[in-house]
Length: 391
Image 1 (cartoon, rainbow, N blue to C red):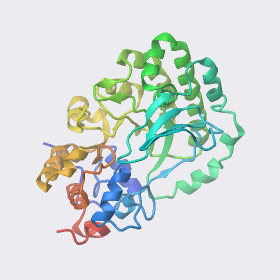
Image 2 (image 1 turned 180 degrees about the vertical axis):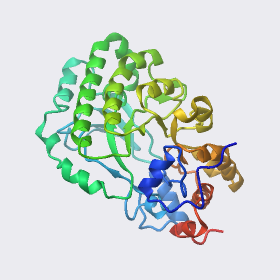
Image 3 (image 1 turned 90 degrees about the horizontal axis):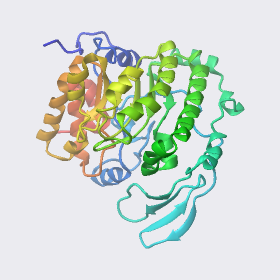
Image 4 (image 1 turned 135 degrees about the vertical axis):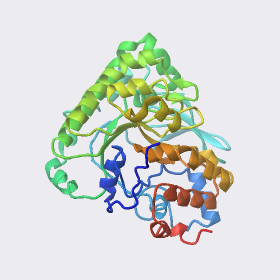
C-alpha cells in the first residue's frame, strides 16, 4: 500500500500550490478544504441550533462556507450564457393556497410552492419547442457581441498570476442548458424527432464557449475549468451513452482541446445522479474530473478510483445523508473514502448541498473530522471558528 500524499513535514503551501499538487497526485502539507453548499432549509435549521444569525448562505465573507473555513477560489468573468438575458419580473398566472403558477421572461411557465419545504418546480411549458423558439435564444449567444469583449484580460492575467488561491474558468453546459430550455422529457424525444435542431443548439453553444475561452486563456493562467450538466438521474443518463457520444462528445472535445492547449488539465463538470455510463466518454474527451459524485445512485469515488485508477480526478463523494446520523456513522463514511484521498487526485466533501436533516453539531463534527483526516494540524482546525469549542 502506497503512502499518503499528506506529508506532515512538507513545507507550508499556499492554497493554490496545494490544489495543484493534490490534483496531480503530488505530496502536500494538508488537504484542500472545499464544500458544495447548503439548502436554505438547512440554514434555517442551523440558525435555530447555534449558527449565528448573521451567517448567511453563499460564498465570501459572512457566508457559512467562510465561517467553516472553506477555502476560496477565483473565477474569470467569461460571458458564456445568454446576452442580453431575458429580463423582467415573472408574471403570476394563477395563485393557489400553497403555490402559484408563474411565467418567466424566457417563456418558461412553472408551478412553484410558496409554503412548506420548497422543491423543484413543476414545469408546465418550456421556452423552446421548435426552431422559431430557438431563434430567440440563438441571437443571444453571438460570440461577436461587443459585451463579450470588454474584459481587460491582459491586466487581469497579470493580477491573477500573483494570487495564492486557485483560479478557475467556467466552460458552460452542452446538454444541461438545452435540457432546461426544452424540458427533460421533451429533449429526450427531440434527439430522435428533431436531432438537427438539438445539434445546432449544442454547436452554437460550443462555438461561444471556445471563443470566450480563447479570449481569456491567451492572457490568464487557470488551474481548473468547471462546467455544468445535470443530465443523469438515479438510473443513468437522460439520453443513451451512444447518442451522448455522437452529439455531445465531439463538441466537448473542442472545448477541452482549447483548455489543454492553454495548460489547463483539471477539468470537471457538475453532474448529479448515476454518471457511471458517461465517465469513460468524458475521460476520452479530456474531461478528467468527476463532481459531485452522488454516492447513493452509484457515483462512488471508491468505485471510480478502482475502475479508472489515477486517470480520474474526483470531487465530492461524501454521502450527505450519512451526516444526519450518529458520529459513528460520520466517521465510518469518512473512513470509507480515506484511502482514495490518501492516493491523491480527490477533494472530499458533501456529494451535494447539505440537506435540512443534518443537525448543526453533526456538521461541525463532520468538518472537524474531515480536516483531521486530510492532515490539518490541531491548531489550524481550532482556528476554524465553529470548531473551537466542539467536544
